[in-house]
Length: 165
Image 1 (cartoon, rainbow, N blue to C red):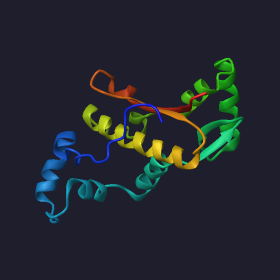
Image 2 (image 1 turned 60 degrees about the vertical axis):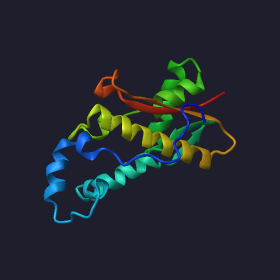
Image 3 (image 1 turned 135 degrees about the vertical axis):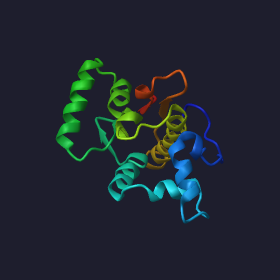
Image 4 (image 1 turned 45 degrees about the vertical axis):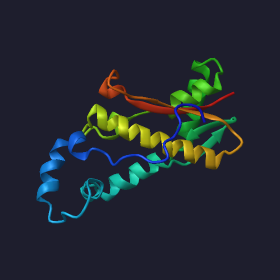
């Protein structure tokens, strides 16, 4: 996998810094022995948790030797592949990159994260996608690209992957 090396360990997120509104809740929570991660998860709806789990650890589909995050509607993904393959003049890696990209903001529009929080989140998702792609496709080589950081507009933080050909 290309890109920055994956860290062996990382510090716990700066919950109070990333999400200032959590600070008051953490201080007043009856479960003072819980860390910020456990408290934040405790505020998550089950449907959101399942949807995000599918995003973090996606299923994949192979179409014409291209790998895509799987979608429920196979006809829609086939149509998208045909459209983008034509638009990229047959460039399979570019087709994979555009179809597989996801803007983090789209996933949490109801409560947009700070730039720092989405950068941390993106790093975690990149780690998961690198691991999942390597596990599912050990003979293929992928680039998992994360676009994030202080110079990136909040709505433009995104992640994607494509095969090196």
